[in-house]
Length: 256
Image 1 (cartoon, rainbow, N blue to C red):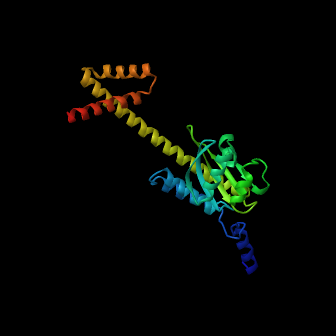
Image 2 (cartoon, rainbow, N blue to C red):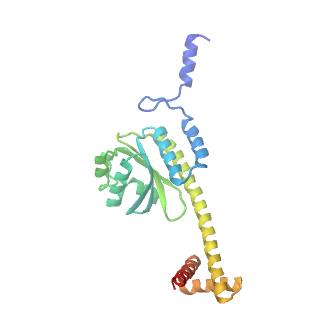
Image 3 (cartoon, one colour):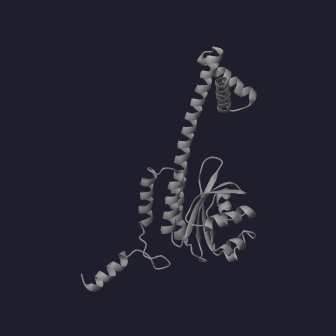
């Protein structure tokens, strides 16, 4: 093969470049997500997994300079779970103050929101001027499909207008999907832990009632259930109160 053929072949296989000229392989996001999937199994908590995901998105989504994952409890309450810098928290503060913005739209309307030039944005007349003044010229916000009352979004930022392309959106969606999986896994673990704690509390309360009132296990549970139904309270809460009363009585007995 001649030199011209070799040069032509190299040009065909050369990976694309980002806007700034940095070479980015097409498989880089997939490789990074595979690494994150492996490491998330050993991550100590959800925050650690989300920090890794945000870091990967900032490094590999074309045009991104900063990123964050934030939970939206309600329009006036946003809790940041992981961020690469200070800008996301500042922008979230504005969003909470005015009650509008890309992150809120992404979460409540179940869609991806792209802002091309914040200085020309008309969808959020109270939010856009203040966000632009902070340096958030471009934004990409992805809803994380999280079960439960709290929803969350992955939001990516750039100080340059028109920083994000369709490729940015597609790659960003991969990281958003991974963040949603991290949330789902953690929620399942938390639900299991809560169920085990509830079982232990009910068992302790039953033991107290069996000893105090000379009841069988079935009778103690039936009494707990009746207390819960009559008071309109969760069984766990009734059990916790019984345990607390017993512990308080034991302390008073020791002092006398």
